[in-house]
Image 1 (tube, helix red, strand yellow):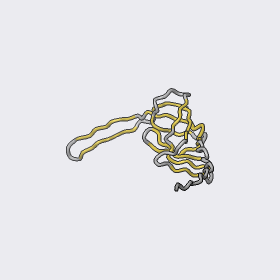
Image 2 (spheres, one colour):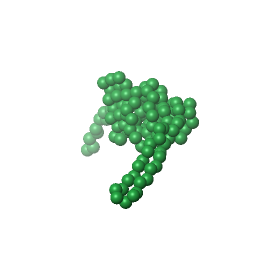
Image 3 (cartoon, helix red, strand yellow):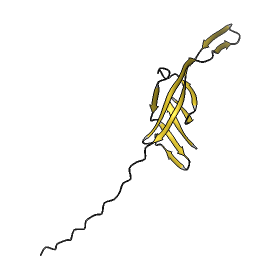
Image 4 (tube, one colour):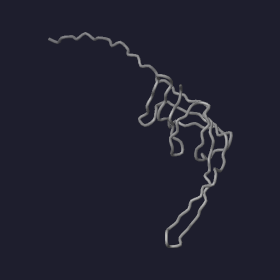
Length: 124
């Protein structure tokens, strides 16, 4: 199973490819694409890469499906015996994104070149 943990808009999300997640509005148009390199953990079967704090060469591509307002939340403040009551409403701005691809570039393999031995010449 291939998944990753990413950081977007101040929160961390565990994601998989073709998954749709809801998060705070990103400020991009609908149907636009984006990517992030803020990958904190990458798991592909037995291949596990943990970032310090982010994983090198890892990238997550996504597409914005929909921007919308969430349901209204009621906030009520109350203080006993002082006739203080206050009601406020709040509707969060949200975005739905679809994860299209989780990828990581493997680092190039370093091969050691053979060292030429130089004969030492004694000076007399």
